[in-house]
Each structure stands twice: as C-alpha cells, then as structure tokens.
Length: 141
Length: 126
Image 1 (cartoon, chains in turn green, blue):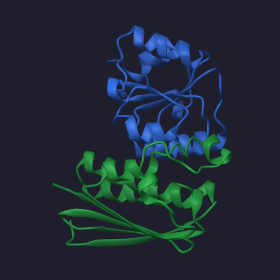
Image 2: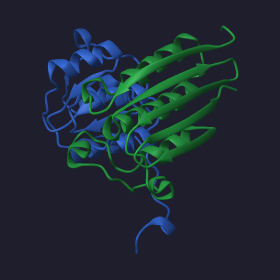
Image 3: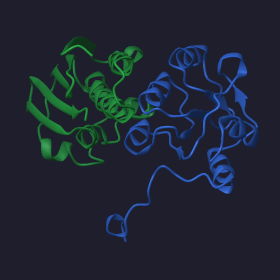
C-alpha cells in the first residue's frame, strides 16, 4: 500500500437518493487495499452514520478520508445547524429526527454514539448556527 | 448455522439475487429490525437481516454492515431500483410471505441466534 491516500467527497443535505454513496466508496477503497475486514466494517459504519447525519440535518459537508499504513482517518465538516447540547446528542436514543427520517429507518438517536463506538479516537466540535466537525480515527493494527 | 439457501427454503422466499442464485456461505446470526440505526449498531458481519423496510437505505446499510443476506418480510417486493443496487453491491436479497414474527420464530426454531444481546437488567426499565 502507498504511504498515504487521501480522497474527499461532497455530501449534499436532504439528498436521500445519494445518501451512502461516499461511505460505500470508502468501503470499496479500503477493501481494494486489502485492509482487515473488521477495520473496514468499523470505518464504513462510522462513515455511513456521519454521512446520514449530514444528509438528515445539514446543508452540505465535505468528508475527507486519509489512509496510511497505520490508521484510517475521517473528517466530516458540515455547514448546518450545529448541536446545542453535545452531551445529550451523544446519549443513545436522544434524537431530533423528523417523521420522514424515521420512516427511512434512521433518526433513532444511535448515530453519534455508534460512530464513537466504532472509532479508536473521536472528537466533535460544533457551533450552533454554523456547523459541526467530526474527527474519527480507526487504527489498522 | 444456516446457509442462505436453507433460509430461503425455510421461509418460502422469492430470490432477487442475480440468476436466482444465493451465495454458498454460512449464516451464524440473525437480526430483525426496521430501524437501520439499530442494524448498524447491533448487527454482526454475515448475519441475516429480516426487515419490512424496502428502501435503498436498507441495501446501503446491509452493504456497510456486511449483512450476509436480506429478507424482506410479509410479501414486500423490492423495487427495480432496490434490486439493481443490491446486485451492484453484491447483497443477496429475498422476500418471504411470512410476517416478521413468524420469520423470526422459524429461524429461532432452527437454532439461529440473535446478533443483539439481551439488555442487562440494570438498563431494563422496572
């Protein structure tokens, strides 16, 4: 594998028809690089949860993926409403999802906790009215 | 443990995978949910997913979570768009006339365990 690989993906808010496109491409890239299947699944789930959060709540975002021999790093920077109470948002079951989001099987308040569960390192920075940035690291070994 | 073909026969499924073929793999667990959030949080790679949610996001979730086979319950038919995505992603898809409850019962009766652990007593409301 090359020493580092970087790719960025644009995610549009409310575009449910393309929701998951970035995450599934990241998963395909990781598989093609021969990365351990457990690591691939953890990264894919974290990326997909983050992507769905952008589609459901934000106007748009950039998801950047860095892959080195040691780690997979994801950064999701969105333009959106931000999160007023991060501690509440990190609790399983807490959600501000609409009926439409729930009809698609999402918005159960599992997204952010599940990203944290699948990450080795996780941080969230948010500003109400401006947006949210997630940094996610999964160790390969 | 069951193969997708055994699950197909047990649940009298219609197969939507290419050429009606199912992969020769072993399914060790089952999960049943219409909540894709729960599938992402609590499923295991290679499990069979029973769901009544027949959408593109079901297939995306199954691909991301490495679900071994998807079974749409209660006679729900996937759209051509859903079938096409499942084929593109290599997700085996079937549909059963049985309800979610009956489907789970039949698979449990064959000894297929749940991917989701029971909630500990201290987290269960009294």
